[in-house]
Image (cartoon, rainbow, N blue to C red; front, side):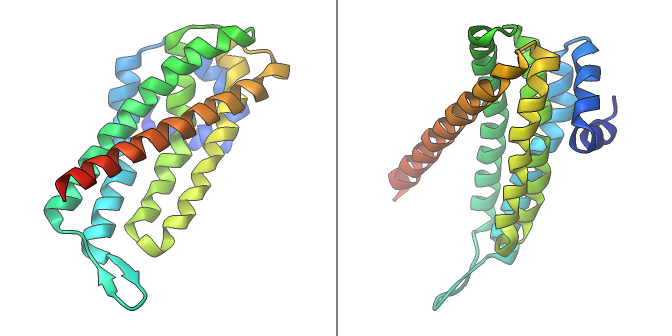
Length: 191
């Protein structure tokens, strides 16, 4: 399915789209190349451009802009972390789902995580204007998409889907905090 068609369908009609996704032949490489990689580039590019061209206005300090080289490195690192996070979260979901009565199929878990992340990547466009970056919170719709995708794609019983979603989100937040700490340590090492 075409990237734009799939993105629109998963956002607008997730309950109808997940059963279609469940029936598709799982091809992690094709999903990575044709869906995840292009969409994960949106927040990375928007952040790099926003930080280097537009900058962030700090009271009493004026507009602070990142050097273009730093912005490119930061964007590339953000992109790499997005790609790695999707894979790790899919592995976590494949491990977690059987403990709640679902399937441990890694390809199915990857489909759920990859397609559910769509709104987070699309909302990343707001990083282009740092003053609007709070609108990236619209990406939290991904939590709902994970919840609605668990039963049709991974056979998690509906009564347990909320628990799996909550645990996956908690693990995702922990993973993000660890990545943030790593980025902070790398930044301190450069000083």
